[in-house]
Length: 114
Image (cartoon, rainbow, N blue to C red; front, side, top):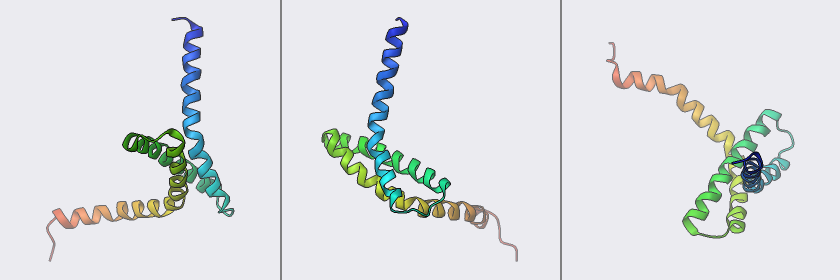
């Protein structure tokens, strides 16, 4: 395999990845337009979450329904909008669960004093 073939395959793979992520990234960006007072940290986190959820939702929709890419990406666009809004609540719930976990484990397995 020569260098030209390797570069061609790498370019094709990158172009396919960018093409499959574009609708989800646009969906997350549109969702951010509705929330102008967000910090850059929150914007990046929610953009990452929205695009990731949308990407995998597109793959799942195509696998389950066998619909074409355009329909699946349109549905995934809506899912990215929902994932964008759900991110802060999911993060808060995960943190609350992790904080309470050591106490719950101790209550379950260690004998009570008294």
